[in-house]
Structure formats: structure tokens, C-alpha cells
Amino acid sequence: MKSTAQKTNPGTVTRVAASLAILSILSLQAFTAIFYRACSLPIPFLCRLSKEPDLYPFLNYAMYSDIHSEGVSVNQHTLIATFKDGTEKQLGAEDFALSLYQFNTGIVVAIQNDDRLKVKQYIEAYNQTGEQPFVALRLETHPWKITQNGVLEETHQIVTSIATDPDRK
Amino acid sequence: MSVGNQLSGSLKIWNSYWFYPAPLFNLAICRIIIVGFQLGYLFWASYLPNVLAQADIAGLTYSPLPIFRVLNAPFPWDAPPSFFLTTIFLVTTVSGLLSLIGLRTNFSLLIFAIGNLYLQTYLYSFGKFHHPQALMLISLFVLALSPVGRVLSIDDLSRRLKRNKQRRSFHPFNILQDASATARWPLLLIQWLFAITYFSAALNKLSVDGAGLFSAEWMNGYTLQYYLISDGLLWGSDLGIWLGHQHLLVVVFSWVAILFEATLFLTLIFPKLVWIYIPMGAMFHIGIYVVQRAPFFQYLALYAVFIPWTAAVKAISNRLSSSGNRQAEIFYDGLCPLCIRAMTLLCYFDWFQRLAYRDLEVYWPRLSAQYPTITLEDCQAEMHLLQPDGTVKKGFFAVREIIGYIPPLWPLMAVMYLPGTRFIGPKNYSFVASNRQRYQRCTFDECSVEFTDKP
Image 1 (cartoon, each protein chain N blue to C red):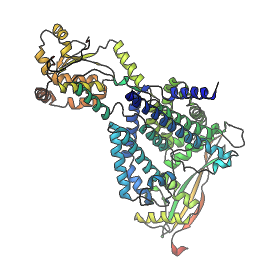
Image 2 (cartoon, chains in turn orange, cyan; image 1 turned 180 degrees about the vertical axis):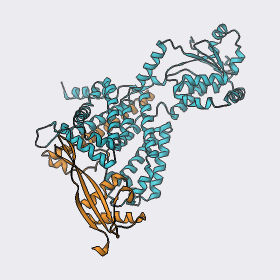
Image 3 (cartoon, rainbow over the protein chains, first blue to last red; image 1 turned 60 degrees about the vertical axis):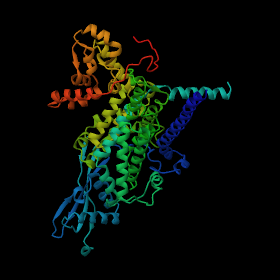
């Protein structure tokens, strides 16, 4: 009789523990998945609880959810370095020992946001690669406009220029 | 109806949904696929170099995630030093290998899950995070809390070998028949997580502020064109940029993506739909990788939780037996401990039931009647395999043929057919066979036995 009880009890305990795990995990996932929708609805108290990804690995899956309409432009950026002798060269991710993603979301964004401190860090990273130092950086944008008649390439624009040589400041 | 009755009824429904007995084989196959994938990810995705380089990447600021702060709390540093990250990586990979083969399965899988969470949350403690690993990390913890090593593990195989050794006999078994009331919930829970995840993705795309509850605006084509061209430029995908120029095709893909994401939960209500949704999901994720470089390969491994592995293997077995493929018969010495171990091992991997195991003590009269030229001494000296076409293979050649009947052991064929094994193999087999132990046949004076009716 005693041995039967010993066999039954762990089963019940296991089921209760598993049920708690199921409920907790489902609640956390459902909360984070719907929570950020709640932020755009008039439920501000939910938004104050945490900001993504505070509950990682429980996340909201809002990737690629922003809507874009006809006429939206995608900007292709190019980074041009000017050297002391006046020559220019287009810089790529490999010049900063970065991946293409790190390049586009790192130094390009830093220049766009005029984040001088971060730009300085990237320039230092460039100088460590042993390449010829440049005296100015110019970020250009090449917009691609998505229209009903197709994707049209528009004329490029200079976003910003940064002088990196102290003599030229 | 009283509150008590209602509660009792709800508990019954809850129990029958989550804790209905299910094959342990499904859980074990998922463990092997999911852990195997994650180990591959750690090894081949330059994971450790990326982790170690993270602190040195220009422009990134260390800002630990809350979960990382908790995991890192027992240690004396705010940001872990390189040697510690390397140690965590090594411990994680070793525990992953152990949980893959099923040695101390639950403990090793728990360590593997914690190690992965530590390393991944460290990587995301520099201001940026991504989605692909999240579901994998939760799933590793879910599996670690389940009877994931009860079959298809070294733990289980050792248990069976020990048991057969103790009772000095081998009884054929089928691990596909092993079921547990706690084998269903982990896989079902991961399926639910998938449903919520995809539904969340669809909900975010369909909900537009100021446009009512839902809007089909996201499927206007321009939205996905924008993402395809943006990602194509960001990651250098020419195919993504090309596709971004095809408006009509992109409108179709937008609708397909939303329909898939918003309705995947239907597989939980109609399980047969997995045969439509899972291939569709695999194509979806491979497609978005090819055109947008969004690497959701973890999902492909996690899709294993949707597949009814046991039913699939049984269906193949039934098909094989109904199409006239009779079982091959192994005649083994039932009084030999080594043979008992070998039969246990073969039977463990004989998921398709391609072999019949015949103890000479029982089946010798039938075999001798069918093959008068075979002697009992020959059979006791080396294993005999009687194939469906009537041919007989012996010793090493029987073992080599047997492996051909057991698909999970096919990788061993490479060793069995190495040049020279025709000569070395039989010699090794004879050496081992001639030096093996043999139990004495029980008599009334020597040992007590339980009489059972044997066929």
C-alpha cells in the first residue's frame, strides 16, 4: 500500500509543477505578444510595466509591421572618405572591420544622428586597420522611390559631411 | 452545478488535454533535433568569437538585460571577462553534447539551456536584440523539465542493459510503445508558443491605429517591397532587391504571409494541417532568409514538435510489412550475456521492427528442421541471420547485414564496409565470441526459475 502511494504522489506533484510551468510560460508569452499592442491602445498602465526586451526571451513579434504606402523611399547610403591629397574613396563595412549590418546600423546611423562620440569610436577603429587616414567623411543618400510604375532611383543627396582632421576644424 | 463540480470538470479537461499519455519517442526525437541544431549553431555560427568580440565593437554600450543581471548575479563582475565567457561556452557545449546523447539528460539539458540563455542575453546586452533565438531558448527549458531522456538516451539504454543482465534474458521490446502522461505537454506547449508568436506577428501587421480594429493596409505590396529593398541593401541580397521590384508578386506574398501567421493556431485544433503548415512554414523561413537574410533557422528545428514521429515510423513499419517485406530472423545464444546485450542494443534501434529475435533455447528445433545442415554448436559459436529470401548469414557477416535492416545504425555501415573488413571482421568476431561468458542452463538444483508459457 505504501509503495503504491509513493508511486502516485510524484505523478501528482509532477502534474502540478508542469501545469504551473505551462501557465507561467503561456501567460508571459501572451502578455508580451499582446502587451505592445496594448501600448497603442488606451491602456497606459501596461506600457509602464516594462520595455522590450526586459522580459527576454519573451518578446513581442512586431518585426516588419510598420506600414508603408506608395511613394515611400528606401535610402541607400554611401560613405565617402576624403584624404589629405584631395582624393576620395567609398568606404565599406570591411574598412571598419564590421559586418555590412553593423556598418549600416552603426556608423551610418551614428553620422545621421550626429552622434560625434560614436563616430569618433568608428574612426578610431578605422585607423587601427592601418588604412590611409582620411580628413573628412561624407554621407550620401541614394533614394529608391517605390511607386505604382515601379521602383525609381532618384538623384543622390549629401546627408552630412564631417571633418575629421583637427587642422581643418 | 456547484463550483466544486465545475472546478473538477475543468481540471479533467485540463488533464486530458495536457497530460494524455503520449509516446516518449516523439519527445526524444525532438530533443535530438533541437539540441543537435543548437549545438551546431554554437559551433558553426562563429558564436564564441562573436560573444568575445562584442565588448570590443566600436559604438556599442554595455547595458545588461534584466535576465542577464539575474544570471550574472552570483559572479563578482558586472561585465563577464573573456575567460569566463569561454568557460561558460565550453560548459554549455559539453552539456549540450551530453543531453544530445542522453547522459544525465535532464540535468545536462538544464545546464545547456542556462548556458545558452547566459550567452545569448550577454550578446543582447549591447543595445540591440533579435527574435530568432527567443523561442529556442524557452523550448530548451521546457524540454529540460520534461521526461526527455526516458527513451533514446544512454540513460535509458543503460537501464535496459542492466535490467536484462540482472534477469539473464532478453525479451524483445519496442521503444515506440513507451508512453507517459508527461510526454505530451512539452511539445504541445511549444506548439502553443509558436501559435502565439505567429499570431503576434500577424496582429502587429494587421492592427493600425485609427483604422478600426484591423486593416488590410499592410498587404498593399508597397510595405513588403520597402522591407525587401531595405533588407536587400542592408544585407547585400540581390534577390531581395529584385523581388522588391515585383509589385504584384509581393502583394501575393504579403497575403500568404499574413494568412500563414494568423492561422497557424489551426494546427492545434486540426493536427493533420501540420502537413500543410509545416512545409509552408519551412518555405516561408527559407524564403525570408534568401531574400532578406532573416535567419530564423531555429524555427525549422523547432518545427519538429509538430511532427507525430511515432505515428510516422509506425506507418512506415506497417507499410513495409504489408508490402511483403518479411522480418529477418536473428538466432542468438540466449545463455550468453554478450548476446543478450547485443540483442538489447539492436532492438533499441529497430524502430521499424525489421528483425525478429529468436533465442536458440526456444527456436532451435524449428531452425534445425528447416536447415538440417546447421548444427547447434555452429549457432552457439556465432550469431546466425535468416533473411526473408532464405539465405543465412553468420557471425561478422550477419552483424553487417543486420545493420542494413536498422536505419538509425546505417552510419556504422561506413566502418563495416571499410577495405579489409572482410578479413579482419570475422577474425575479430571469432576472437570475441570464443572469449565470451555463458550462463549455465538452470536446473531445479541450481536456481529457481519462473515458468512461463513460451510460444
